Length: 188
Length: 188
DNA sequence: GTTCAATCTTGACGGTGATAAGATTGTCGA
DNA sequence: TCGACAATCTTATCACCGTCAAGATTGAAC
Image (tube, rainbow over all chains, first blue to last red; front, side, top):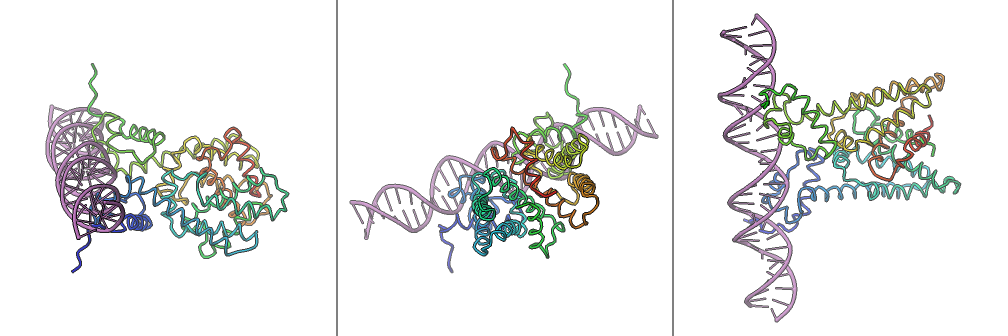
């Protein structure tokens, strides 16, 4: 029989993976390093060779979730060509990401670790949306106007994500058209 | 010298008050029932005569914060008469509430306990805003349109509150006009 | 004044994050 | 090939946490 090796080999990665899974299922509140370690079959002190402490571990997961979200947005960008569509598709991708993983929203924004200034999803959104806005309005917009529209659109999308967590508020069958209609309320 | 009485007399209230204070200063993450009990000068098991467990205690604080927010909105309503102003003042009150107590935002929405369907601030906002919208448009709006506008406005305001937590994104000197300008981006 | 329920203390339990000390192993240069 | 070294893991332990059971203290009601 194959006894398990003393060195796991990929413990850091498996910890993040299992942590992600746990948060997705039960939320971060009841997550413990010890339970995670046990479920992997490793001692309770093992993770501390890879993460300074629990907070650093959760930071690593935050980074992972943020990357996933950025990728989802990136895919939305690549999947469409027209500028008007682009803004809507970006918003949809953002809302749907959290609609499909409601506990990620709590995890991400409940820890107060997201600094908008250094938040890749917002950076990607800003660049893409700014470009689209400029093309749509043929460069007639001032910087201040663009900034205002960007913040308004992003805030709307981010707020909608919170709504998406509550059942029944957004019609899930028509999530696409719902979001499109709402985004159109902002005069872009 | 006056020895402290065996019965505190108002422990439940003081616990909520101290808990609120602690969350406002340090956030909910490091809050412990024991520390709170000690700071009040009572044994660690004392609070459990008033709260079933820690979660129930935090629920009580949630209720308190929610009430405070509702009152802030109510004051904003009473302080202005014109309908156009009303929508903006409501939004401002909401954003400023969390701008002044950033950790409340994390506490409230990081626990996943806020059910929009039973969230007094949203109910108040909905009633007031719906009334204002109807008067402004002389009853020409369909129910679907009103619903759409309500959700859009609320989502925008709620998203802005998240922004307000990040320094520098909203110009704090001109918070009033900033919010007004952003809300005007929604075609109300 | 007795009784009773509410309130508080003491003491304990299992679970948690974290650290120190030591065991095990892969790696890399001599 | 071998020996050192660093990385990784275990064991044992610590202080802290939420929570409960048992009992002490008290105000209020009869």
